[in-house]
Length: 332
Image 1 (cartoon, rainbow, N blue to C red):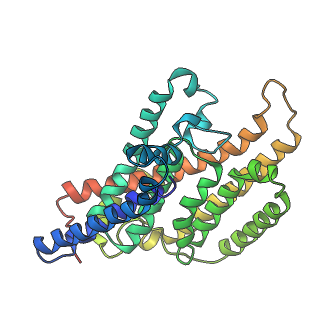
Image 2 (cartoon, rainbow, N blue to C red; image 1 turned 30 degrees about the horizontal axis):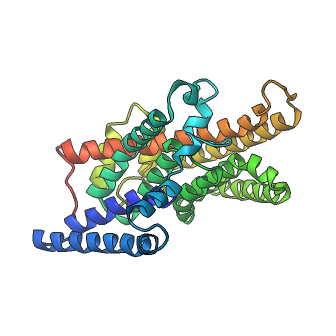
């Protein structure tokens, strides 16, 4: 199940590379066919033991599917910092909808949330777009898919961590919040001390990074296509936040740096507040999980903000690529 966090991103990127980076349509067709044969062959090898052993046949494949997609467990289990669990405080999803309805709702929401990212990766299959596309895909699955575990946030954190050499504040802040969202689980496993040491190390690293003068922009647009970033930024001039995050070129680097520092400070204050509330807020028998929800809401709010920013940047980029008069698709 967790491989789906990245599978659609790899699919979009490889399909785009196969189509836009080949010289003739025959080369593109052969490349796509080779990818298809590889994927189908891999699935066949994985499922072969289940088909030939045990009950065998199609029933074994169904059993594997039930294990991969445990829909019988419900929309979410335990307290995970995703959209469904965080909003369940107000909207009782399990009470309002049947299990089949929640499966369909989660599927539709995930597809809608991931589609602009997949389309952007397909239209501009560059290395940088690949990394940020994997972020968007993995976050979409974590926030909106069916039956997500707390530790699944580590999957979106993988491509985020890959940006540390160029965007250290982004990676540090995301890791800080991700760890905090897993704190109730870590406390249950008696890992409070390692958690505290790691969080304090991240805070120290963040303070060191914030003292540095400049960083490059987040640059979720294609680094080799200045026209894309310029056109997309012009369409977002009224939205300073997205303008800073999506472009940040030229004279905006100072603003980008201090915006990231501010984001890190807010994140540290939020994590600290959640722990203070967890320690000193009185326990209410009627709401036994209230203290856990401080960390759920903190993580979900941050992840939704980050996902929505990437979603809007992808949406604007796709719109400019398909309908913009100045933006041209690069093939190299």
